[in-house]
Length: 294
Image 1 (cartoon, rainbow, N blue to C red):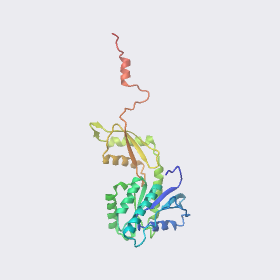
Image 2 (image 1 turned 180 degrees about the horizontal axis):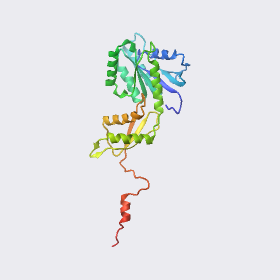
Image 3 (image 1 turned 90 degrees about the vertical axis):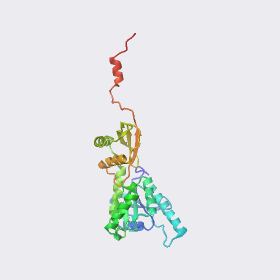
Image 4 (image 1 turned 180 degrees about the vertical axis):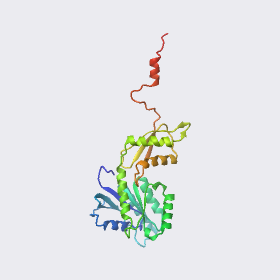
């Protein structure tokens, strides 16, 4: 999916059964500021709902309505499989995922599976901790700790403690989704990007590799839907996770890329970049000291 193909922001509402996806959608669709027209979705398992939110056109991709009450055994296993498949379809279509989890129950196995799909597809994400009205502050802190420990790869996703039933912070979740969409469109100036890394590298140089200081020669951003930055290094090396975090934090310090993952690619470029108009030192020596004829 590309923004060049459509101006519509696609937001998928995903999560395991019974986390409140229907309540969240009903809360949004009942809002008088939203103009809604039902239309069949692009797949038989998902329904796309066109919305107008504060002059912003978007599509809500609905994955609600899977689990049947009282389902158990093989039927429950099949319904769980369907839920993951439907979430996968919605995540592939979307630009931003609103990933709902149950604040009272915490993270379960199926939450982790659906979250892994968001990570794998490099989608922007807002974690909506629904039913927050059922937990106290201590429970919210415990949930934050659980997310940090079990979903470290979603560290870029903000957490919104919401109650879809009462409408608490539902608008905040959608606003973050819109903000994420704006950052997915962002294209950073190559000149500005390299100025930032030049200053940052003076304060925090990369380590030595086999006796040679690892250096970032230059950085550029690819013109892709998922923000991708290519860093050209003076030699081939496997960067330590702490160095990768430093690179990502350096970018985010100037361009937050709210709720959006960054893909980092590293290319070894050991060649020395010769400045235009300058001849190599060997050529200069050859000119100054011509060989004598015997």
